[in-house]
Image 1 (cartoon, helix red, strand yellow):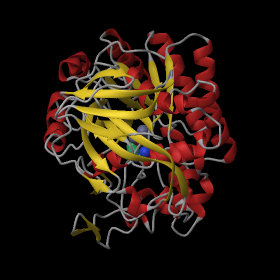
Image 2 (cartoon, rainbow, N blue to C red):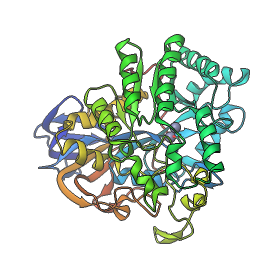
Image 3 (cartoon, helix red, strand yellow):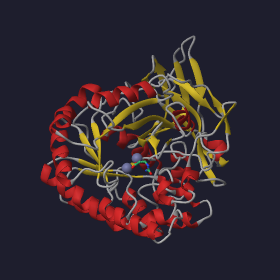
Image 4 (cartoon, rainbow, N blue to C red):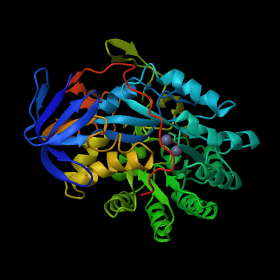
Length: 473
Ligand code: URP
Ligand code: ZN
Ligand code: ZN
C-alpha cells in the first residue's frame, strides 16, 4: 500500500527542510509539499517531528562464538534492538574459520537470513592468508561483500603479520574492496597478559592495563603506512585513543584514502568503569580510555577527521546463569561471569546497537557539539557511502529504500535495559535521561517499530550485496 508521511522536517546530511514523502513499493518515490493522498494511501502525520534516514551501523557482531560461549544477540534479537533504536541496516562480520572463504559466508547466511529483522550486509574477516585465500579475496565481490577486516592483535588467533596485511591491502584494493583494520599491538598484549596473570592480577581493569593505548596508536600509524605503500584505501575500526585520531589526521593530510570509525562507548565512558564491582560489563577490545581520549574522539568527529559512528555491538550477559525473559520465554547464555576469576576469560564486547542514535543525539546534538545534519552524516550517510550502499541506504531521496525514522527530538526517556531491547541482562546507559528518540521506524516502507510496539518479524530483513570501489570520504 502507498504511504505518505506528512508535514515532518526532513534531515539529511546536507539539508534540513519541511516536506512530505510519498512511499510506494518499498521506495521513496516523491518528496514535495502538499502531496495528495490517493484513495487507499496510508497517511502518517509527522508534524513537529523530524524525519531521518534509517541508521546504518557498519560494525556489529551477531551470534558470534567467543571464549566457549556465543554473543547473546543473534540476527533476530540484535536487529530488532537495532530497529528500536532507529537503525535499519547493519553490517556483520563473517569469521574465517574454514576453507574456502565462501563456506564461511554460506554458514553466516544460514545463521542470518531466516532471522534478519532489518537489512544487512557482511564484512569478511581475513585472519589467515595463504595462496588460496589470496585468490579467493577478489571472489568476495560475487558474494556481495566489498570489505575485509584484518587484525594486528589476537596473536595466533586472528592476527595477520604486517607482510600479509600489506598483501591483503593490495589484493583487496585491486578489486575495489575496502580493508578495515583492528589496531592494537598483539605482541605487547601477550607479554603484559602473561606478566599480569603471573602476578595474580585477575580483575577486569587488567584487561585495559594489558592492552596499552600506545599499541593502538602505533598500530594505526603502521596501518596507515602499509596502506600508503600498498596504494590502498583503509578504514580504521573502533578508534578509542586520541593518538589514533592524530595518526588518522596525519594520513588524511597526506591525501591518503584513510577513514575512521569510533563508537559511543569510546566517546562517553572511561577506563574507570572497569574498576567498579561490575566492571566486566565494560570489557571490550580495544578498551575504554580516558577523558582526554573521549574529547579528542569527539573533536575528530566535529572536524571531519573521523567519518562514522558505529557500535561494535557484541553483547553478552553480565550474569549468564540467571535467565531473563525474552519475548515471553526465559533465556540465559553464559557471559561475562566466565571471567570472574580471570580477566582473560571475560568475553570481549558490549551491547550498543540500539543505544547508538538516542545516546549520540542526546550527548552531541543536544549539547550543540554537532548539528542534526552531522548526526545523520556519521550514523547513516557516511557508512552507507563508504560501504557501497548509497544512495539505496543513508539518505532520503526519490529512489532510495524507504528506511525512515520519525524522530521526536522532544521525547525524554529514562533509558536502560528494558527500553533498549538487546537480549542481555544489562545496559551501559542504565538510568541515563535521553532526549530525542525514534517514534516510528520504517523498513522499506513498512512500519516495524511504533512507539513501544514491535511490528517487524524474523526474515523480513534482506541481505544487501554491496558496491565495490565505493566512496572514500
Ligand atoms: O570487544 C569487542 N569489540 N569484540 C568484538 C570483536 C572486535 O574486535 O571487534
Ligand atoms: Zn575489532
Ligand atoms: Zn568488532
